[in-house]
Structure formats: C-alpha cells, structure tokens
Image (cartoon, rainbow, N blue to C red; front, top):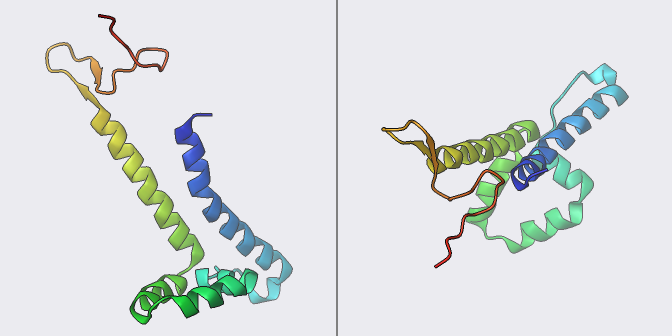
Length: 123
C-alpha cells in the first residue's frame, strides 16, 4: 500500500463510518425510514464534552461558520472533503507528468526511475 492509497483510505474513513452509522440506525429503527444524520447530531451524541468545550472557547463569528457546517448532512460534508482531496491529488499527478512534444514520452519532473526511487548522478 502506497502513501497515496493510505491517504485515500484515511479520507474515505469518515464518509464510510457516517454511512455505516446511518445504515445501522435504519436497521434498528425501520419504522422511521432511512435518514442521513447531520454532523452536529453525531458530534453532540457521541462526544458532547468536546462539543461543549469548543462551543465555549470559540468566538461567535467562528462559531457561526462551524454551526453552518454542523447543520449539514454528514455524508455530504465528508464526501465533499474526500472529493476535494481526490481532485487535488489528481491535479498534482497531472502537474508532475507532462508529455514532451518531440518524443511523446512521459517526463517525470520528480526524476523517479522505474523502481520508484530517485536518480542521483555521481560527480
């Protein structure tokens, strides 16, 4: 597993955990139907002490922004974060490899060889 794959796993973990929580809640309470939970609900339900501490120690203007995020569905927030990380990773991979006009070969600006290591020239 490469570092990139591990990063993707870490980024997707909150999304999968919140979706798993929602599926579990649906299985336990099928009469209510399937509902997506909000980030604020998850935070206040499972760790109210940290929610209270942040609420007391953050100024009003910042808390308004945090409260706006807490009102959103957790799948949307965590999925959006994962999408941003994936897009940035894709953009960085495009920036590091460019085809040369004459040969059409990939040029790696990080100078990695085929085995994944770096090339060093001896003087």
